[in-house]
Image 1 (cartoon, rainbow, N blue to C red):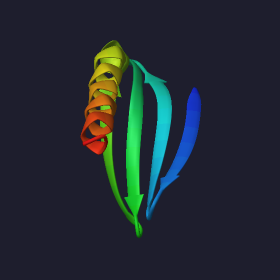
Image 2 (cartoon, rainbow, N blue to C red; image 1 turned 45 degrees about the vertical axis):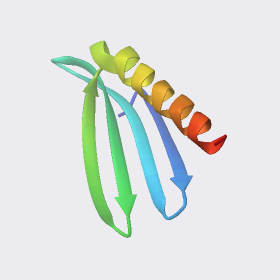
Image 3 (tube, one colour; image 1 turned 180 degrees about the vertical axis):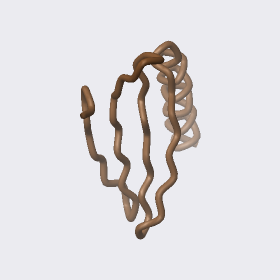
Length: 68
């Protein structure tokens, strides 16, 4: 059972964000579902802030490029 579970629909893709825990520790499981095909990545909880920082930089870069 996930500690936290969220689903996000973006265009034709669904993303599932599940914070889970096992004997090795907590982790974020991110699953992309496109027409029944799923791909998953696992981010250890120890790396979540670095992961967030990278996403925030990508958002800022996208905003800057959109202003051009």
